[in-house]
Every structure is written in C-alpha cells, then in structure tokens.
Length: 286
Length: 229
Picture 1 (cartoon, each protein chain N blue to C red):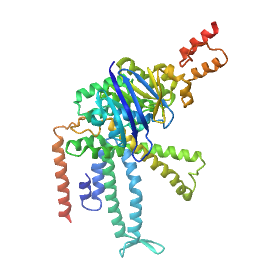
Picture 2 (picture 1 turned 45 degrees about the vertical axis):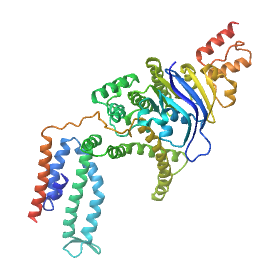
Picture 3 (picture 1 turned 90 degrees about the vertical axis):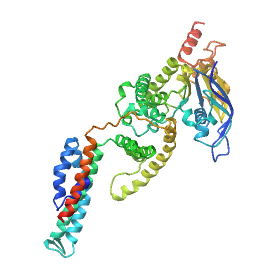
C-alpha cells in the first residue's frame, strides 16, 4: 500500500513558545484514504495540518523535529512552492482565502495556475474541470466577493485542486459556514474522495459526517495522538471520551439505551444513523 | 485628459474641456450619472471652502456686495471659479478613470511592461478589500449596538463610537493578514519563475497611435496655454 503522508516522531514548537504544539507524533496515511483529525481546541490539529502541507517549517519557522514525508518528498528539504502542488491546504475562513485580485470565479481559480506559470489553454481547461468537479460551473463569471460562504469555500477547494495535488488537507473547512454551505462543501469533499481517489486529511467537528464518510479517525489531545482507528472504534472509545472527545448523537442514543439494557449485548455502540437503526431493530426483535 | 484639461487657457477653458471631452467620454463609457454624482460629492466641500475663503478674504479688490464686515470681491470670485474648475477637472478625470478601468487589467498591462507582480498585487488587493472592510465595520458596529453602545445621536456620541469600532476593526484585520498570507502561499504566490495570466490584455492596432495622439494633443495644449499667457 502506497503511503501518501508519513510523519515519523514529529515534534514542533512555535517560535517564542516554550511548550511544543505537537509531541512525538507518528502517523502514516495511505494514498486514497479519508483521514479525519479531531480533538479539542488547542490540541494541535491545525499545527498537524500545517506540518503535512509544509507550512511548518517553511512559513512558521519554530523548531521541527522528526521527519515529514508527503507524496514522497521530505517537507523540510522541499521548497513550499513545490509542496503546494503535492498537498493543498484549505483553511477555515473562506473570505480570507480569496486572492483579492480577481474579478470572476474562473479567474480566481486560475490564480494558483498563473503562479505556476501554466499556459493559458491548459489553465482554462483545468478551471472548467475543477468548477464542474465541485459544482460551481454556473458561477464562473460571478464575482468571488458576491458568493455565499459555502460557494467561496468550494471555489477555494477548486482553486487548490486545480494545482494538481494528490493530497488535500482541510482545516475545519465548514466551521464558519451555515448548514447549507456545510452540506455543499462536505458533499464536494465526499465526491472528490470517491471519484478521484484523493488522499484527504480533514479536521472537522461534524462527527456524524466523519463517522459516515471517513476511513480513519485520529484523535489529538495536547499535541499527541490519543486514539487512532476506524471512526466506529474511535468514537465509541471510552478512554477518548474521557479525554474530551464528543459523541455523535447516535452514539449517545445507543449509550443511553445500553445503560437501560435496550441495546443488543456485545454490539458496538452506533456511530451512524444506519448503525443506530440496525442496533435498535435488533434490540426490538430480540 | 487631465493635463489637457488643466492646460486649457482662461477661466472657462477647463469647464469647456469638461463639457466637450470628459462628459461625452463618461457618457460613452456609460458612467455619466455616477461620475457627475461622485464628482459633485467629492468636489463640493473644496469648492465651497475656496469660494468662501477666496471670495470674501481676497486682499484689496473690487467689492460686489458686503455681508457685515465681509465683502465678496470680484477678483476673489474669479479666482474661486477658476480653482473650482481645476478641482472638478482633477476629481472628474480620476473618477472617470476609476469607473471605466478594471484594476486587474490595468495592473496586468503594467506587469507586462515591467511592474513587479508583488506591487501589482498590493494595489489591486487594496482596492478589492474595501467592500470587505466596509462589511466588517458594519458587522462590528452592529455587534457594538447589540451590547448597548450608542452609535447614533450628536457629534460627541458619534466620536465616542469611533474607538469601539476602530480597535476591533484593526485588530481583526491584523489577525486576518496571517491567514491571507498562508492562503497566498497555498496558491504558489511566492514561487520563483515566470508567471502567466488567464486574462489577455489585447490591444487593437489603432490603440498605440491613439495613445501617441492623446500625448501630442496634451503637449500641444500645454504649449498653446503658455503661448496665450
């Protein structure tokens, strides 16, 4: 199995700070996997995203120990301008990711390609393909400043994908969106992973979506990985709950049912709607 | 256009230039109404202050009529009419340029002629960020109102509102700078090497000739103006 992202005993301390934001983190993400990263605020999730995308150590200097390999390239020794074509990073605030110099969505998506020095015909073709991919083809001639938060975030994802990365790192891409925007963005991400076999690392608080869509879940607390496994295993892990991991509404329902002997004995607690339905049906029929 | 307008001889030359050149060009560019409204809004306070100061405080001169100890002088009035014309010319020509030129196209053309990309980015991004800045200021003002800060009322109340608006506006903008820089890096902005452009600045074959013609006309007007003095 090809490994897209490899972190080997990585620790990182921001400049001017004494305690490390990441402590001895080791992680291997196979190509094509959707890896969810969850944890409380200040757990080190964004730092992990910056490390994978190469912004640490190229943008945030600080002290980085250990080795980070992304798409076969050591991030410490590869220029950031090269890394961004291997691992694209999408941030929380959609409005801060608009270049601020373009007047249409198509031009905005082409911004990164212009910086790469791509020819105009290829640029146009990529723009059209990426807009279709995230479902914003009808917005091509609209001003980026006139879009909703969800539309901007999808435009940003298209802009990043246009640069051809094999890996997409999303740092809470829906945290500043309304429910409609959140649904639009998450549907686009799911489509990307299913149809284009991209490696996706997503930091997200929407556990129900992660439980149904992620292949793997990593829990960070105080800069270290405290749980790593399938969403079903991690989200029902009592030790992780005690370290502050939230439960999906289905896990909570199953947990309370279990406490009242209304959940099948020996069955793992539900983390998705389908699992909850199956569990309650089984409890009802037995 | 600006040089030509300011070079027009006589007090009314600049007004004639505006009527015969600036306004028809604005009409051709379908920005006549916006241009007139914006020009009046911007130039009126200057024109009024010039009229009051020069008209009434002109040393010596011929009085037209008196208001108490002050009298309006004909020389001061003529000076203020000429100055107002120049102010209107400067404001209207800059606004015509701003209303009819896409900044990104202008910058692209300048980059193709050697302007550094980073400088071009700073100029266009600054122009584009204004609406976002206004929206944020409005949001902060609403938030302050929700906390009971009085934002209306007399001048003193309004001045008191400035601090709770400006401080969060500046701080939040500074915080955004880092994320904006990250977003630019994520799009390869600082990558060395040749950059390309999706937009093509196409120039018609007659445009270089027109540029030279306009330049020569401006020089001719300046020479004419000097000769007529």
